[in-house]
Length: 304
Image (cartoon, rainbow, N blue to C red; front, side, top):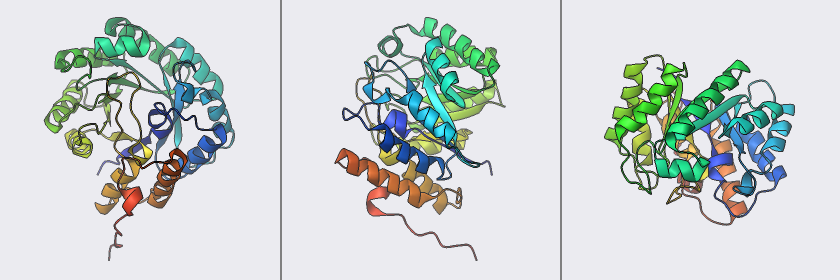
């Protein structure tokens, strides 16, 4: 059975829409525990202008602290970049895996990056290749892949044209991001298969939002179609500040709980993930969308 990789994005996608800025020391505490929980990748933050997303103003410093204290076996540290300047900052502070993408929605692309989809694709491909030349792991994504809160349906052909641009440049680690939460399982299945039909060796990641309550169904649709990596957030927190309805992700602890009940990823410390989600909820003084952190896990009996 292929190991399903868990990419925890709560510190970035989870916090980016929060008005209450989390102190760096608090983020570092959450980050350290996540790094040592057994998840594979932790997204530390994004390299954006602090006036646009104040919550990400300390991303460079957080990376420096995390890389300085990193231990063997800790998760890979990823960061989101939107342009060449973001790449420069990320290289300077120790990003191990660069995540960058293009929105298939023209409206969302302009709100998020100030560029149309065509210009953004050309620029991101060049930036991704520069990151690879620097010896860093790179994941490229198609944002608003399954629909847009502003434009509604996004043509599959537009999504796959971005995928083709990535594959033609030799970029084979590709994430399909359900930025607006419009995805449904049949669509997710078709899009994941569409990538793998083009490049069987591609590593496909699904980034699923739970805006309309079908997040977990879409996650399993992606896995059944051949995706091998899922991006999720502690407590189900999150949402893009530049889409019409910013709604949360699939909760990391909910997904890990489901996997472990199926005999997978027993190496991940579910109790650690649950406690981080509880601490985040306490800090924000409200319930988060996740389920397991509130009601507790179902005990899994050891195999005889």
